[in-house]
Image (cartoon, rainbow, N blue to C red; front, side, top):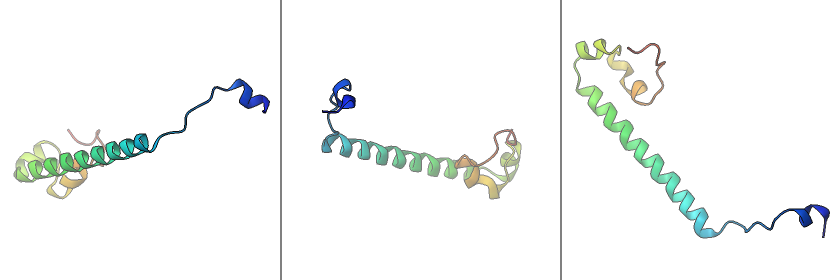
Length: 76
């Protein structure tokens, strides 16, 4: 036994179940973000050009704004 293994606690290896649950949770979070992004795009596309201009967006910037790619300082 090495000196290192003598002073460190025994750590159980991660189980397959834990790994699968973590992967499923990661996919679920990614899926809900996808749905939120598409809902935001749909809501912004419903606005007319005047209302988009009121919030500091052009129609061509809707997807970037919904994706969080816009500079928050630039948008009102």
